[in-house]
Length: 312
Image (cartoon, rainbow, N blue to C red; front, side):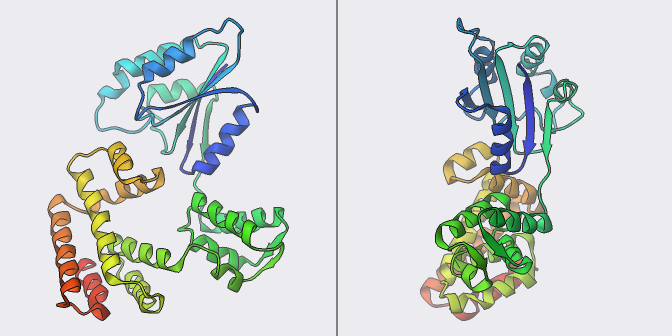
């Protein structure tokens, strides 16, 4: 049997790829290296069953495939043990490392797996690809949909395949088969309140003033309370500050219930702020929260003022 490494940013695409490698009704064991040790995985993989049963071990959370600042990781005891296992793997065991980040292809461990043609990389789908994928998936279930309407679904799924699948599943449940139009979709796709709040918060984080103002335009119509938006943004900035102060992504996931793709988004923008800036922003948000609740700040203009201040 083999040792595979699959790199993919999507949970659903990852699952589909794993399903191709693991036959139905197989004996499957799952590990998460953020909670378990690699030694546990290798011990299980090396165990020989008296019945020669084929075993599949799926491993998430392996950090040793990623680029690291330290050069010591390639020489770590755990990595060496895995390298040794690769030289003489158990014929009855298949290990599948599922990585939601792209590996460092310069690393010895990656090369050992890649040399056996056991590395599978699934590229992230862009907006155009996701739009055509939406059309294809709905067509397979008896629906027809225009490109622009499919594009609307993709936009409201944050151009994220996993969120998109959730939206498509809602359509399959709530709409009869046949032609789908934009009006049908607007009643089903993720609540506008959630989308607009997310768009505003993300725009503030990326300092995209135009997008932030566009999101605000619909807040009054949707009856979104500015206090809710300010509190939500403060929570997001607190997560960035926690990461800056050394709290691990693993602990952030555990404490805040964040998905892998969300953690990746935090890490992508983490260097956009200094610790000092984050503290200043959180103080600003607390002041806005207090001002809104006390009536010192007008709700009608609060989010506009905040966007101007934070996107400067």
